[in-house]
Length: 541
Image (cartoon, rainbow, N blue to C red):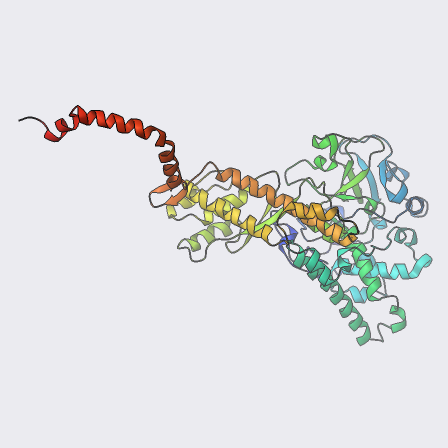
């Protein structure tokens, strides 16, 4: 079977998911009419795409050792999973995964055959939820599937797996009230997205219940008593947090064992994924975790976890976020704040001036490069200047046609001091405006709040989210300030002038005051000698 169509709304890799306020639960697809599997065959491999609005697995809580090992036994004994497919990883207390022995970079740690993964095909094969899921996002379909399998209890074919998918708990962002989201995430760029996702979840449930009520012949009421708003929102929270987006197969999948792995933020694009392991792999002290890359392998027809770094026995095994989301977006999906995110970033937008006489020319050039002249999003990282954004702003602020082609998007090259000054001031203003949205722009506010006794778990988590965002923006502000310092000027018609020229003149006069009496005495001696008389007479003859 051909894989499902790609999501309708995709961002480029440079424009992360926090830019878009689209429904978080996947685009609506028209499925292939051909029966078969959700994974592509060897001749039908799908080119990987940048699925910037999907979700991945969270840190696991509430799964004990017995449940995890019962799942392993079920997979191997009843489902025929080869022993070596997961023998490199052991699951202990709370489902924590650790390495059984040392692992090499590129070594497979877990391999789960595609028939043991839950996808949209399993949703379509369910006579109870297939009709309700038709035309809805894949994650909605998987949530309906999970609701139904939970209701079956021990009678479910997937019971040992479903047992490792406990409640998401009360603190998942989908369960926060709108008032809590607006208050606790005040100033955060994810506030509106968080409110939208929670509202979308309730709207989807209402639409599903309306569909059931409107066709009692196809959907007998007694068959759907299990589907309550509480059960649906909880199942959706679990699916949103733990469903894997497999780039090579272009599908969402619930993958046993793999979704027990904690998720860690991915390094920036172009940086080795082994940095996600932390410790010595990232040039820091301490042992590195075993950082796994999760994807579908066409050759083996398995979902595999491949170790990205050299790792030692007994270290924790984690999954690298294949979607490259930032800390805030990961929080919206999983409810967990990854404060060690090695590639954390914020999103800033830039645009050209539509009243500019060169606007049409700039628009054509930008669109030719795949950018928008109206609003272009850029990721801003803590340890580097946003060079692409700098180049865009330099281009947007160019005044003369002759300067259009002097802007480089490959090199960090200044167009002119006046242009650079304007661009850096714009960046500084945007950063200050960003920080001004919070209740308090200082990081100290969150640091003190985190020390408060009796702070609710939701307020504590929200404070950690805001603190991460402020750290990133303050790092950007400092980087812009360092760039701005050497210019030390203001634009005038004559060029760049020192903005402190008047003050420097005053200070020079004050510093010269002690020399004034000496200068006056010297001038008096010149007058007494008649030096000025010679000058006044002028040349003889």
